[in-house]
Image 1: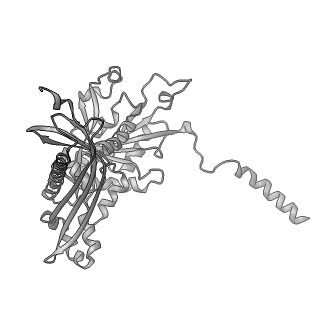
Image 2 (image 1 turned 90 degrees about the vertical axis):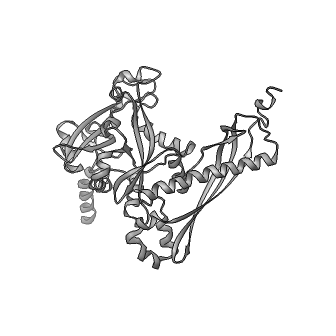
Image 3 (image 1 turned 180 degrees about the vertical axis):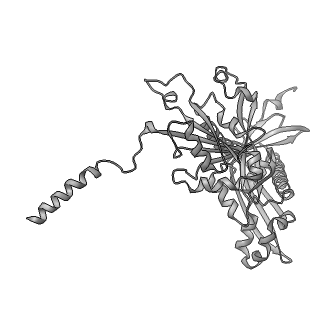
Length: 401
């Protein structure tokens, strides 16, 4: 009887502690950080911009949202990211909360000198997700990028993250790179990381104004542009357009893209849209030196034919296949050459060598980027046109007859 009485008393004391979480947080006490912009500071190492969401102004449904701006941006400075975050409490009435952070923007100045001094803060905080996208602000400050407003997506951070995935799937000149991806490149002895570049196009000073959203054609907008090449944790240069696409081909991240070729003496007369593509990278050894082999298999369909051409003729299709193969190979070779000039193995060829011959890799890894600069790389492309669309003979074929 005494034992049951003692048990009942213990339960009574424990019940209050079971009615709530010990670390619960009231929503009204939190400032949801959607994006972080990091620039070089003047008096301190970093100037940090915090893009916070205004929940009442982005809600939808019958109740509607507020008429104010969807975001608010606050700035603070510090010699570390932690110090800057603590100093932000002087200006923000709520605690910074990182569980919903989707974007980290780094300025070119920070990327060239101090990037390694902020990575640990992003990786260590238990609230911060390392699946967060990272980009470089090109030709502008990170503050300008995280302060910009967009007229299609209420939250600017959504515009950037969606746009990167969209251009990767449809164009192939960019690819999603998160904090985890970047750290993996940093710590690998056989691969260097890359990041997407982002521009503020048009009148940069208008990007932060609500009036920019009141027109069908904005005076300023955000645009994905180029891939940043890193070496030893520092920004060394950029590859752009078709060269960037060549890099994405090698990394096997191209989902779809378009390849234009000349026909009948007309430049870019035929456009082929890729629908399936696969990249295989292998390594063999010649005279004790590694040789990289890149093989691309690509399938697509004719999305445009702006000249007279008979797409029912197998010989014509075969010739088009060869032209497409030549163009894809050109883009890949140019991407390799651009990276070799920067002595930065962004493709992970060193990792392939390591797996193929661990003993040889021990000799090469200390000076791998120098070895990479003169590395022999062979490219083979097999491309097949599977469909011609709904018209086998374009109207050009019947004109002037």
